[in-house]
Amino acid sequence: MAHFRKSLSSKLSLGILLMAVPIFVVSLGLLFLKSRNYVRQEAMERANSVLNTTTLRINRFVGAVETATDVNEWLITQYLQPDSLLALTYRIVRLNPHVDGCSISAEPDLFPQYGKHFSAYTIEEGDSLTTVIEEPYDYFNKIWYKTPREEGPCWVVYYDETDSLEVTLDGLLASYGKPIYKDDGSFVAVISTDLSFRHLTKIIASEHPYPNSYFMMIGEDGQYYIHPDSTKLFKESIFSSADPRHNADIFALGHEMTSGKQGNMRVFFDGVPCLVSYRPMPGTKWSLALVCPDSDILQGYYRLAYIITPLLVIGMIVIMLLCRRAVSQAIKPLNRLLEQTQSITSGNYEVYIPRSQRKDVVGRLQNSFAIMLESLNFHMGSIRYTADQAKLRNEELVKAAKLAEESAVQKTLFIQNMTHQIRTPLNIIMGFAQILRDSITMLPEEELKSVTGMMDHNTKLLNRMVLMLFDSSDLGLAEELSSHKQEVVPCNEVARESIKHTYEHFPDLSVHFETDLPDDFCVHTNRKYLMLSLREIFYNSAKYSDGQHISLHVTQTETTVRYVFEDTGPGMDEDYHDLMFQPFTKINDLSEGLGLGLPLAKRHIKNLGGDLTIDPTYQLGCRFVIEIPKT
Image 1 (cartoon, rainbow, N blue to C red):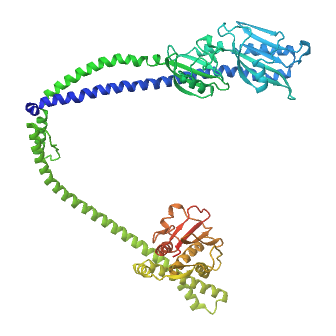
Image 2 (cartoon, helix red, strand yellow):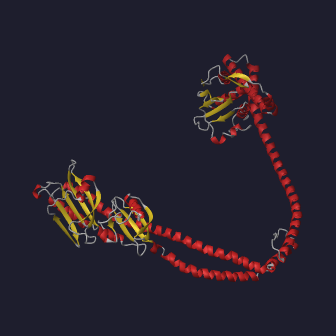
Image 3 (cartoon, helix red, strand yellow):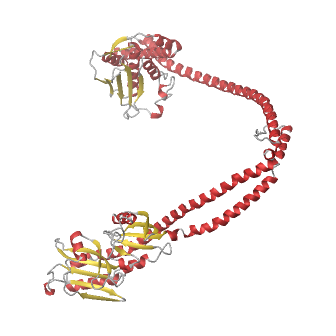
């Protein structure tokens, strides 16, 4: 045991064998089992493809029979004479190779000269056609006559009375029956166009995905219409040939098919497991199924077992050879360690030597070199860390310098904008003041009022901008935060005062005021900052809208009072909704103002414990909502 622990070659050989052999065996086993599912899935897809193709072929035959019947319906009512009906049945059979026979059976006493019964019939026999007036018999209760007469155009299946059940498929017919009515709505006859199941069997038998696969077709009650065992046709059903206690899968298949469903199912027929793909026939009450025995589906899979066995033997031999080769290469770790140490001596300190749990000479040697390399890397890491920190600080200095440059640019832009906004009303005031000084006695009274009004408006505009600059400053913010004066403020009164103040700046303004609160309803808040916020919203609505469709609606929730402002101005893109509340930010650089009105209003409301928002769902202009707490 001591020799084994110290022998590198012995441990390596045993380790490879214990690891490789189970993995190899389990991998092949999983591959073998997985391939079974792939084979079944491929068989299901192949069966569905063949079933769909066959269904399309049958549909072409069935559609041809229906079309041949429908396109000649009008001729029956137009030429409702015995000779014409005989000629018409002959024409339908002669012009349509998919049709085996055609009959037109009249209502009782339609043609008195032929008695109560009259039925014109044409049948294809080999290469010749036979057209006759059938001998009188009671056909009124026959399925091919009674069912279409009561239910309308439909397909029925029946045995031709002229054949016996032992004559294979020749007597089994699918008939498309359609009632014939005159223009006045009276029923006159039934036209039945026959398609022999012999033709359908030839169509279906043209393609099989597997050697022993076969098709079967059943009706709405489960009776066999097509089946490789002809003795079951029209005599047995899928339910009668199975035992409910032992063949529940067949019963489940029968219910699926008679219910008009489509799918795949594994079923045991006579103890043989089979894959059944089924689907309904469009336009009929039939269901077609393709039965594929598992022995055919898995034939290639079973053949794979003969390949797996020698492959397993060969794999074991290869593993043994590889193990022997691995033992001969057992000293390679020493060579690798030598290469790593040489790389270190050449100046490459990125080499990694892992710790080893081995107790042999190679393991102890590797651990010694690993400890030495870790110490060396620690000191090198300290040097790199110092260099990285210096680089990081340099990058931070560069970023700080860029921010300083950007701040200087922003400062210049702000000063330019503020200078422009203040200089414009100053120029107006100075200009009008010069006019008043030079020609006050020459100005008419109305023009004098206009000049003084303009001077007053621009003076108030200057005062408003100066107050906004003060409020936006650190001193103004400190004053606002230190103002804790809470007073009882009537909600409706403060709204009316804000409207009145707005009228002083915009005399032509029209504001619709509506409130859900009584006039004595009050809240505890700061009247000054609430008033400033309400005035600012009114000012913006009057400034950017037509001034004639501004409304204020005062309402409440359980905890807040809401002031809802609406106008019909140009509105604002949703992308700018957050941007408009940033200080010194204007959506349009050409518009007047400093970009402080809405940011200051939002700040005031926030400090009052509420919020100022814009409703993005309002599309007629802008809708601002101020909410303040009741207490």
